[in-house]
Amino acid sequence: MLIRRERAEDAPAVASVHRSAFGALYARENAERAAGESPAETTGRSPAEHTGRSSAEHTGRSPAEHTGRSPAERTAPSPPEPPEVDLVARLRSDAGWIPTLSLVAVEFDTVIGHVCLTRAAVGPFPALGLGPLGVHPEHQGAGVGSALMHAAIGAADALDEPLIGLLGSLDYYPRFGFVPAARLGIAPDEPDWVSHFQVRPLTTYEAQITGEFHYAEPFYEL
Ligand SMILES: CC(C)(COP(=O)(O)OP(=O)(O)OC[C@H]1O[C@@H](n2cnc3c(N)ncnc32)[C@H](O)[C@@H]1OP(=O)(O)O)[C@@H](O)C(=O)NCCC(=O)NCCS
Image (cartoon, rainbow, N blue to C red; front, side):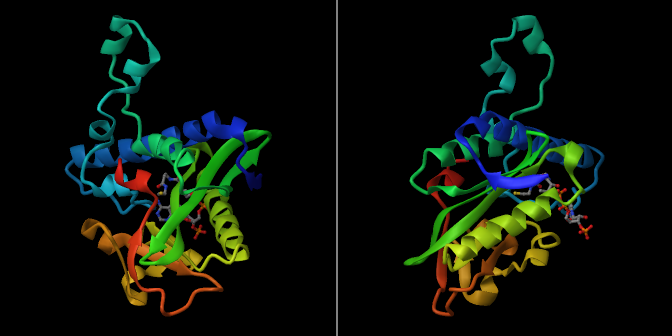
């Protein structure tokens, strides 16, 4: 497995990785809810999840409606498209997109994981937002997510970016140096995100970087 920058021709494979990674995650959470359990703390709380809407509600239409399948085929229930797929597509055409910080994990020429960092801000200070991070379910638990995280953090640090923010699991991200944002005087601009919002200060971080964290716009359009 190797980590490299995303290339233009990787876009469909990146969408496929997030479709399967987040599709499996939401299916698991829905099954737990249906069984009357509260879903286990997952590794990722994307802004989409924090809006309190299901991925079906986010997309409005099922993937079947986009694929031109016959009416008979459309009656078969198909899983809703996870909002993270559209998020990456929107980020790619947003002013906050940073091509150098969209990374893929590749095994035998196949993209099996993806993460991106996009332009964000803490008040007047530049910062980066991380996400989405996804690894194909068949390759999870083998160190791919960790490799992507370390590569992304290292690249951001080498570019003299002061800080990365993300909305994510309190069980997963602290191992990469993320701390609750409130500890550094930083708060997301969506109050619902406060409990899971974390930041990773980098080498050029300074204590005066406090205030409201704002992601690239597509994070608010989910
Ligand atoms: C989260 C995700 C990217 C992790 O990738 P991965 O390649 O499976 O992770 P790794 O193999 O590098 O695991 C690293 C560590 O995280 C732990 N981990 C993996 N999934 C976890 C989970 N759901 N909750 C808590 N810890 C988890 C592993 O146990 C491992 O711990 P260890 O080093 O002590 O053994 C992947 O599971 C995924 O794509 N999940 C669905 C989408 C998602 O939740 N994305 C993140 C939100 S934006």
